[in-house]
Image 1 (cartoon, rainbow, N blue to C red):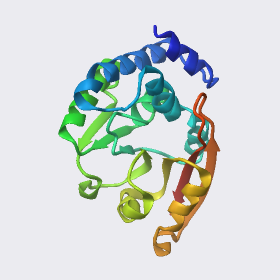
Image 2 (cartoon, rainbow, N blue to C red):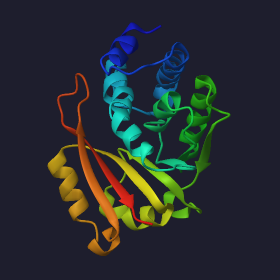
Image 3 (cartoon, one colour):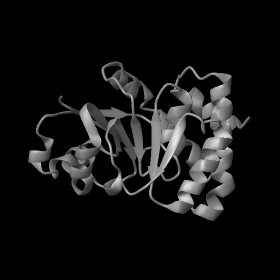
Length: 216
C-alpha cells in the first residue's frame, strides 16, 4: 500500500474501510500507469494524491450534508476526464448512482480501465458525450476543473431535475462569487446558492464548493 496515499487520507479524518483504501490505491496506480499516454494530470506522485484525489474527497462532509436533504436517484460527474471527483467519491459513497460524462474517446478508454481496476464497473456508468448532447436529467451534478459557470449554466439548468443540486469545485471564494455573478440572472431564478470553503492538506490555496439547489 502506498504510504503517501494512506498518510494523505489520514489527514482528512474520514472513516475509510480497507476495501475502499485498496480501490483508491488501484485507481492511483491506474492514473500513474496511463498518465504518460493520456496526459491526464500535470503533477508528480504527491501532486496527484493531494491536488487531485484528496482535493476530490476533502469536501465529502459538505456533500454528505447535501445528500441528507436531497433524494438522489441519478448523479453525473460532468467532464469527468481523469475520473475526478467522481471515482474517488464513488469509492467512498457506494450507494451514489453515478454516471461519468466525458466527450473524449481516449479519456473514456481510461475511465473504463480505471473503473475496472477500482471495482466500480458494475455500479458506475460512463456516457461518452458533450454535455450539450446529453438527454435526460440528474438529481445531482458534480464537476471539478470544468468550464466556467457563465459558459455552461444554461446547459446545466437543463440537465438538473427539479429539486436537484449542483456541486461545483471552485477556487477562491471571491472568484467563485464573481464567476456566479456573471451568470445570466434570469437563469438563477429559483436557485438557492451556498458557498462552502474547504481546506486541502498541503495545498496552499483556498478551495470553495459552490452549491446551487433548484426549487421544485
